[in-house]
Image 1 (tube, one colour):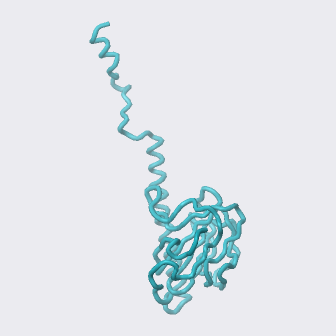
Image 2: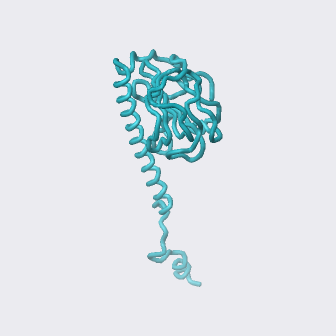
Image 3: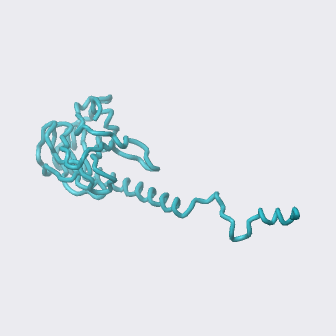
Length: 198
């Protein structure tokens, strides 16, 4: 064999070259999927913020009360259920996760984190069956992906009262509760407001 033939055997022919610097079609599809999910999540957050703003403005004369004091655990919230945390608050999959996901079997009771008024109870896009509770002082908690809702809009609830049941409705990968804490309309890390662990 000549050196020229050896070199020719090693050189890829035009059209057969697979450049490894470009993502595969599968990877490109996954990137597009995550980008779309991130955009959907941002739209869902905007919808929830609008529901909260509308409900608190119509239910409370001062739009939700005074700003809660800064610092952890100033709200007296408790975990809505005991389970396994599967996703924390914060950056996730190229987007931002505005709550904590707590996995538990379908049908597990979900409890109100604190006393308050139900300002929304119904279907909300990717959140599925969703409940919002206004606790006053600008604090609102959200409970998403429920299999069944046990409360109605306008109803008052006590801390620990069953408000629904764990499910996998909306954009969900399995039975869990997506739990949010919003302060003056902005999502906050629930761990900063709830003592202990779920």
